[in-house]
Length: 138
Ligand code: ZN
Image 1 (tube, rainbow, N blue to C red):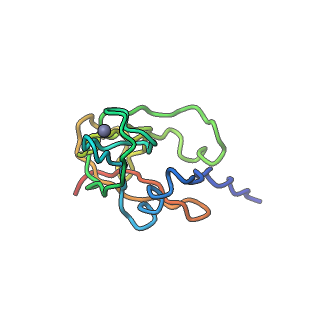
Image 2 (image 1 turned 120 degrees about the vertical axis):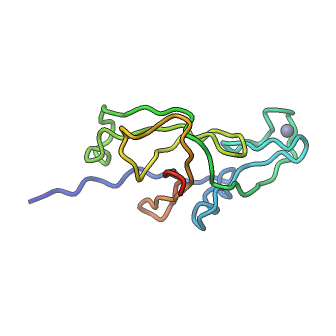
């Protein structure tokens, strides 16, 4: 008898982050945008950390970025990830400026290079929540 691993834990959107997850569900990476100083922000906040304005909206990101840095996870913290060990944990710098914690998919970890061009893809979790991952740019 084989036992299925549990599902990966998925984030629960709240009022502040709901537009981000709504965008992900339709395949669009959303960023908070400061209407006062034009800064693009991630994660979503109520105030702009650059100018302290609360005049914030949302903007669609291009989904393009570069690999800023990454590490390989060898320690198993949750049984849902056991089969994927080791896996990469990456920080991607978006074209629009903000950096995102994510994973790079569609490439062997030993081929990852800081500075490589990446594009967003979305992974669906149990319950339908989708999260942005990145793959080598086509
Ligand atoms: Zn601002």
